[in-house]
Length: 311
Image 1 (cartoon, rainbow, N blue to C red):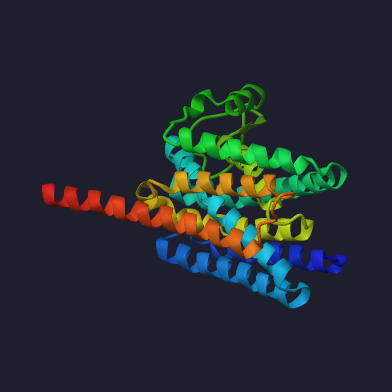
Image 2 (cartoon, rainbow, N blue to C red):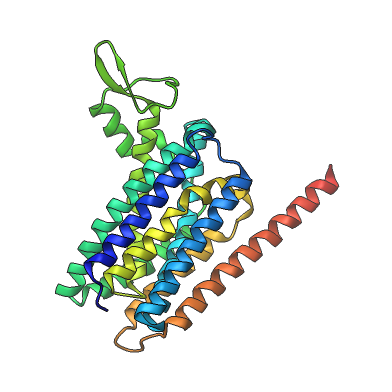
């Protein structure tokens, strides 16, 4: 797959332009409602699908299939990010009007870190072909671990990153009007929102360690890995505000995501035995997610019906 420099520049230009439009759209109304989140989620999904159509038109169906497979995998794994973001915001009692700003900068950081990971992964794969088997084994183990520990709670006050941040960076408490830094006693100090932003960034880096190898399982083309990641991550903020209030209903989604990681890990491990066709791989991922979501909604609807009858 030959990708000219201008194509990379055009993609980056579109990403930056859409981020600027998103930021401007929410500057006067930082609290994102469900209707706005639904509309923006639609915008991001249409943009991601439209780019896939461009890949199909320019480079053919096979590369388009690889892009769509990577996009679906990253989009599904992004839901796990949303779960964790909701827990972090709730744990630190972050007001809803500040959440969009934190997630905006979080997405910017995510794009930078993921681009670095993708570049490093591409170099490793080009230099050491056997690294794909390491990625595959890692994904299988990660999926198994996710399934076994899906109900664990986290005490963020004991988080190593947060403790180191507070020890190194002078900090203050309280609400400072959505600012990340304020000046006190002649020096700049970090507000609790900056600590939350750092925690969000580190969390996304941890998730990227899982999701980047997962996309390398369906394509080793750096352009497709980056763009499928980028267009999926761009909708992360809208997805959060759309799903934040109904997270409790997706009780089986963690298991579904764990199975997705195991599937793509096995696909990577079987590269020299059987190269699983991209459409089949995409179909399996879609089937796993559809089953997990449907089962979750049915289970929680039953609970809601029982509780409503009891009341």
